[in-house]
Image (tube, rainbow, N blue to C red; front, side):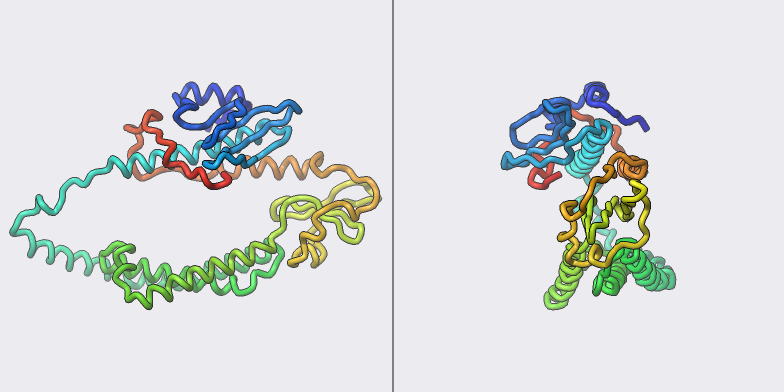
Length: 325
């Protein structure tokens, strides 16, 4: 799949595909200062800046540095997401039901009841598979959370059992909706208000636990503790050997760096002596390449026909201009 790597290539790609800045609000090679805009440009220091001007006029910087390919990739991927958003919105606005209740025959009521019962009976035959799926959702979620805890090198606490239970409850709810032949939203509204409140509270509680757990997930960057220098790149850690003056992969890190006090060590001020920049190592280059290639592996196929949609149908009023990106 073709992907622009420079600002000029990205500008040409926008022009070839008919994406006008005035309509899409994506400005390539321009430091556009008005509210509601995405953009990329090269500043007077030779740095490439990827930005978003939010609805209130404040600017959020997505990237600022000397890696032009990575900067272009960030804006290009955000634009791809916006294309999907616009196509989805357009399809929803223009989709029309093939028939409505007014077109039904007056003698079709009995047939509809019969057909509904028949379909429910057919769906009921899949009950054994649904039961197995519900139990598997719990087991697989538990395995995933255990793996994630080890991968992040931190204790996720109650989040480990809470997420599998929530996954199982949600799948049970969706399964019941499928068996009854009703939409999940309609089924949810039919639940007793007290039960609905409890169900919603459980979901918010799990989200709250997740937010607490995320507080302990470290940022990428340098960490110095007891005059030992570390660098976190994604889920991997690297240690600087002062004697060899070289970086090496570290499979164990001090417990302080995986606890709630990790921010206290997110600096290099306590590391005495000089060191070679991690950003100049092959580890860093490989990590950045993985980040650039991450979203390219996603499958953006849709289950509706986009052939009739064009860039002329773009409506930036449907873009979330209050988020940072």
